[in-house]
Image 1: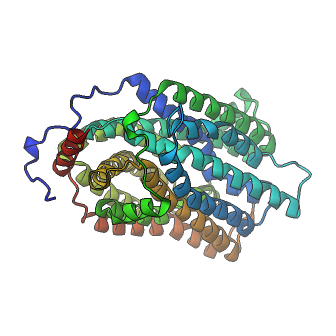
Image 2: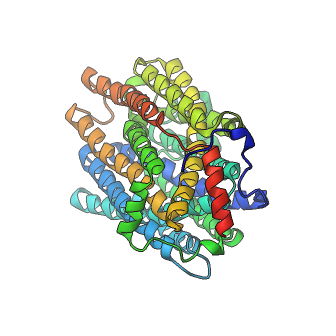
Image 3: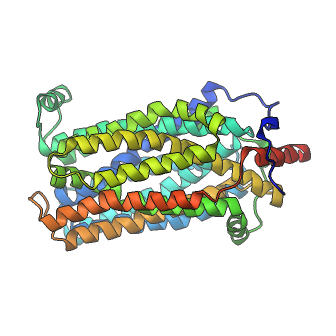
Length: 476
């Protein structure tokens, strides 16, 4: 089917469908806040906690985290396929999401609270079991939750709003995660300013990071369970999407790969994921051993999160005017330049880190919102050609790429850190600092540039989507 060219004549599909209520949008996004807070602290601090507090070797813990994320990546397609096929009173997505609530809470507690008398092989086994269990529980939640978001509305621009609200809640969760990260840093390093000392006094922060981790993991687990139960109670699923999955996992994967728009998005997403996967892992190391201000790592991440959070409503509006493709393409170019800029930061160059964080945050608000909306559109293309609804399979494949990237880069980055002579809680060699700067700045900048060049080939626009959606609505 040839795409339409006159977008001025496009009537938004699903226009007879009322917009989702604010209550529904918030209920859908709430678990992203709770799980996002736990996931943020896990991704940004667990490795450093393991090397500097638990005294596990960087390569050992990097391998545990990396392999658990690879396991998570390989289980995503299975979770996506089976959630597409599930038929229960709660629906095909919410039953999986609810089942994940307790395992997530237990997994979060386990990885942050190994018994103090464990050491050596016993400690390694404990952390491995905890990470693999938590990764499996997050798969049970993440893939069905993303799939549910793609199903809530058929409207082209309403989907951007859904993705935007989810991202807003996820960013709020990350801000909460930053607060937890700050508390952990203060517990580990103590105060380096009057403000830090005030925080220690106000919150009675212990000087034992393991004690602080216990309190935070209990709170995050309870919050995640409450948010998931509330979402399941306050959202609904489309009955017409039930019972229309692919005939087999292989068929579902084949359809995803055959979808030319999804295939190109997958390539772009893979490029971005491998480029920036090491950044959250290395942020605490970079701030402590390169820039020289370890406790500022939390404020730095907040300088990314807040602009990203505040920019989302503007990106939603701009996407109507300039189109999703052009907006996201511009954001990729901004990311690339900002990451390259990071390479030049040396000890004490906090201003470079601050400027890059703010610029990256603004661009990140666009990428996370618009890309999710585009994914929902290309799933409609699949339904037009196959007659099936398999959001789970699509989001599982995209999630596989992201988690595989994180898993492999966790192994590579931490192994390189150890090979370069990293010594915990000591001044690092120039070779180690250069490696941190290169992986932290040049690698993601290069990959975002390549991703932008590939995304220039994306052709699925609002006009073609309107034509497809009109035919699907006519089929009923």
